[in-house]
Amino acid sequence: MKPINWINHRFLPILSPLIAITSALMVGAILIIFAGANPITAYTALFQESLANYFGFGNTLTKMTPLLFTSLGVLVALKAGQFNIGGEGQIYLGALGSALIGLYVQELPAIIHIPLALFAGFTFGAVWGWIPGYLKAVRGVNEVITTLLLNYIAVNLVSYLVQNPLKAPAAPSPYSPLIAKSAQLPIILPGSLAHTGIILALIAAIILWVLLGRSPLGYQITAVGLNPIAARYAGMSVERTIMLVMALAGGLAGLAGASEVMGLKYRIFEQVSPGYGFDAIAIALLSRGNIGGVVLTSLFFAALRSGANVMQRSAGVPVTVVYAIQGLTVLFIAISLAIETQRKAEA
Image 1 (tube, rainbow, N blue to C red):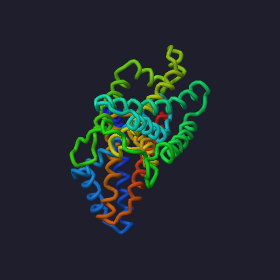
Image 2: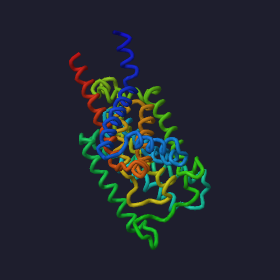
Image 3: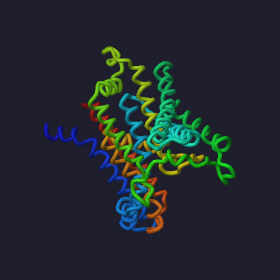
Image 4: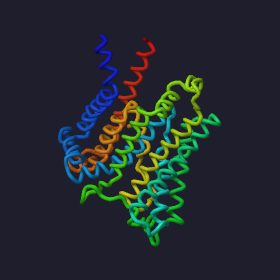
């Protein structure tokens, strides 16, 4: 029995998401059949376009960038026992910060302008994440409530700004002027939308993996998440750790917003994110605290988004089926977590 237990603990973070995704695709196939289409044709079109096609893969990497940044932010908060559902608002604030630098700081070389705009995006997102961290650590206010409410404030703040002071002259809809060319992220796949933001997101994943698994700070974050009382008894500052991880989570989501402005749209629109902040919650839960799992699941969700329209055109399957598959994936991983928790309680 020991080898089996070792295998379960060793590979559970990888097997659980795979089983959840496979189960969701199987149920999704039934939905596709009900829609009057062939699931093999539909899935072939979806994944061939998003992963095997040059331009489609570039689009997948573009969508993966904000998903990966934001889900890393959700994951680091979860490591400290904090449930950050404010990624959407933090994306908006990060986009605002980078857009302000791109619009109003001029005549800088790209080697300075790009890092400065990224830093502004990180800082704006970090401040937006620190606020609920402070309220939780110092005032005891539930972070779920504050992060949720701050989402609405951020979205409406950006909406007001792009409709008024930041609106481009004679713009037919709310959006800002183009940011400076020196603040735009370079394209990594010529002719596609893929930009260097995905490289930065993967670097962030590696740094976070080292931080959480190979540093004293990572040990402190994990200790606070597992048992804050014991961590405080060991001399760790629980309050400071909570504020730190929430700021870090917000900063990572802020980079997601910055990458959308600097690498894709080159301006800030009223709708910065199509829901990346909420998808990131599902991705972080699916990964079960594993950085590699976050990367792979971000790729999967990005591929679904990238190939959805092609699947609709090629196989006649509504795009809503893709969102159903995402929801089913979360449902199946939640079931597996509930079963695992029950087994631990019985043991």
